[in-house]
Image (cartoon, rainbow, N blue to C red; front, side, top):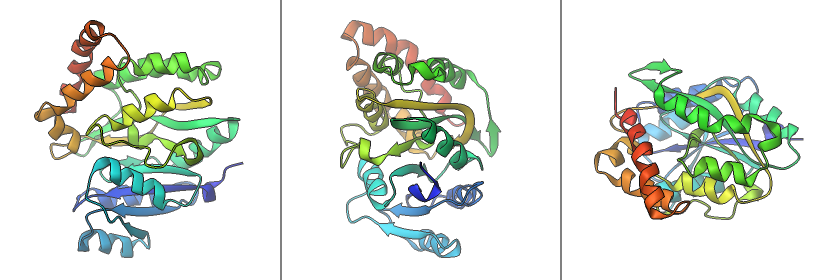
Length: 265
């Protein structure tokens, strides 16, 4: 049985995000006591001061900053079997950890856990929009307990895009290899990781309740990637890993419309 002592929130901190403190506060407000660490490849006085203020351990990686290396180091720094890579701009509902432990303990063989999510735009929490509805529709089959183990179902879901919100995910460390996140992609390394994990035996545990909020703002890495077209090229490349090129191009035309909603509103 998993308990909160078997889990860590590993917060990836980069430079001086004005939202980092709000993220930490949401983790400290969990309904069960949480293990929290801060991982960074860009140490500075701001991050150090928050670490000291909230008595949260700070771990500094010795490699160049990069999404893949930062996430891999965050997983490595966590000494527990379960780890959630928390993004510094996002916030978690108080029951995230409690709900995750309940679902993990209901499964005989969990691969990963993830939740429904909302967006934060200009400080406002948004529970529903077109993009969120599309992603929830894609994930609907995983509400059925009988389909959680189906490699076919989850691969088909992922073949139309990645509806899994990365910071909502809790990983089971013994189900992944060292340096699991690859630097082949800048924006889709999570999609690539879930696609690989979907081939393994075990359960994809989806909680359809909104348990965290993903912040959308113009300074986010995702927004930057959309602006310079890197995201589109990577999306098409991922779709081609599931489909022949003509079909992938057709799916991409539908999928790319959702990218526009990631721009600052």
